[in-house]
Image 1: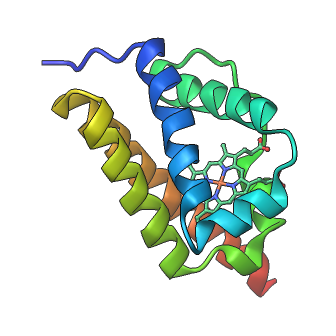
Image 2: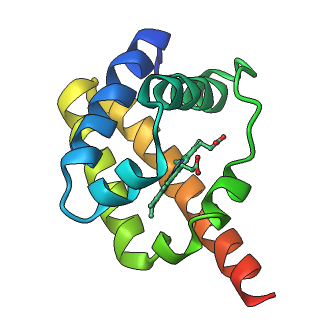
Amino acid sequence: MTTEIKEEDIARLVPAFYERVRQDRVLGPIFNGAIDDWPHHLGKLQDFWSSVMLTSGRYKGQPMVAHVRHAEHMTDDNFAKWLALWREVSDELLSPAAATAFQQKADRIAESLQLGVQFYRER
Ligand code: HEM
């Protein structure tokens, strides 16, 4: 059975997740230091997840470049914390099947971001 994901799920999940991130002792200062325009960032992230989960093609950015710019913060511990918060908020807000779909995608994207940042760092 395929899980039905709606734009509405993304519109609830993304702002709630970043709300939680901003309150986190470790991740909060990283994001609050890097992002000035939160409404713009949240819009971009909703476009990103809409492209990833619904293949809407709305996101036009380069996530790898964005994270290489902040390479010093892309540690194993920070990725683990990011993914743990993502799991927590998606479990709270979405149906179990939808939450699992978002979590599996995030796991895979995190893995490739982590590999990519490592690669750029070692060049
Ligand atoms: C952007 C931090 C993991 C998706 C950003 C920015 C920061 C950041 C600081 C803003 C970049 C800027 O505008 O200068 C982190 C940290 C992570 C993490 C500390 C974990 C250690 C992830 C993961 C995903 C993700 C796992 C996806 C599943 C994005 C996207 C953007 C972004 C789509 C917008 C890129 C753009 O400007 O087009 N992140 N991130 N991030 N992040 Fe992350």
